[in-house]
Length: 167
Figure 1: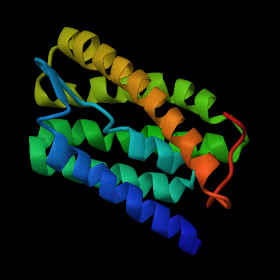
Figure 2: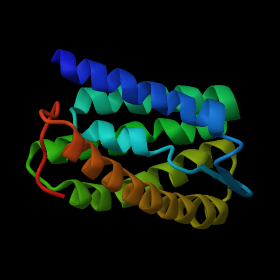
Figure 3: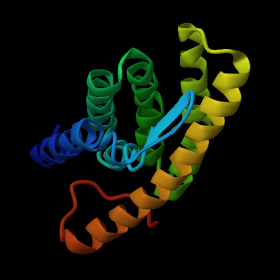
């Protein structure tokens, strides 16, 4: 791993921890049994552009933040970010555009979060309809934020750590 990748990974991991720990209540939306923290996927999504290892690290950091702030169910849901983050980073490595990757990882993200809550006694209806659909909507909103932030960063940073296909 290059130094630039480590630095970007550290910055994004810090953001992935700060968002749930500091803003979980402020940016949080709850429709029981579903909860979402606006922008919480953005650091993970941006990490996919850097490398699969950085994506894994940032997603794991996010899961830790949610576990500490909101408990084991939300922590387990956040741990599912590792799956879509690494998948997305690998797709970017193969030359897919960032917005294509974000769209392709949406069903994986929603399905994995819906399935993990079944281990905590959620019914299929609550897991699928509430958690799965809610996660898909949340992923879509955070994707728009991530695309915007990525475009701004690309225009500001003369030599980005990693380049991807055009947005």
